[in-house]
Image 1 (cartoon, one colour):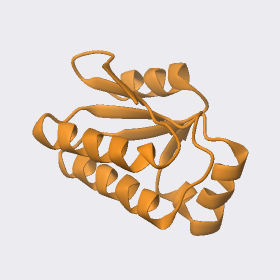
Image 2: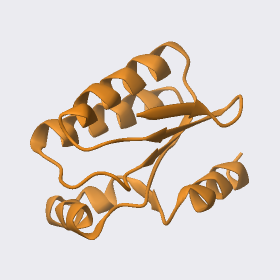
Image 3: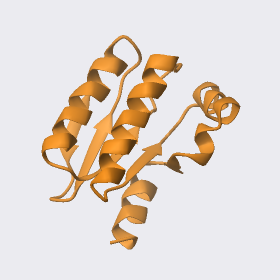
Length: 110
């Protein structure tokens, strides 16, 4: 995963498919637990989600919300978006079309 500080307040993360997905989200969660920032997670390389992945996403979201920061997901492939729709995650997570849209949204909300 490529995690980069886009600014002092925003982290960009490009996640890969499992088995790396879980490790990458755990790393990201540990990082924001110690130094909370807004986070954009790019799903372009993710092919599927399992229950463990969903649990990790919810954990990351909770950490950020508890610290008054935002999580935005972007570039979600159609097959993964189907999982979001079936599970109701589309109503829980904020989603943007791409990195640029997600960054613009975060900056407008500050």
